[in-house]
Image (cartoon, rainbow, N blue to C red; front, side):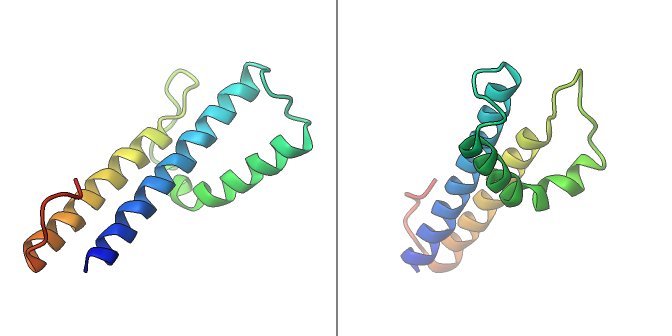
Length: 102
């Protein structure tokens, strides 16, 4: 059971890292710190969009950008953390696991 809790926790942390990396790369391109025509940057941007767009698109329909800033990544990170916390708390209660995963 520890392995399942660890996998869930690690998957959530990795996805949050992907979201943060996408936001940071987007800002770096916007401020011209990274050349958008660079093949490596373009490939990384496409990969990150493929990983995050399935989650972002439904939320973007309801939450427009505020002052040109897309709040979708923030909403997704908060939502994922809440859902993961609830799932892990359920595991702790159901299987009497130690409370060390939070």
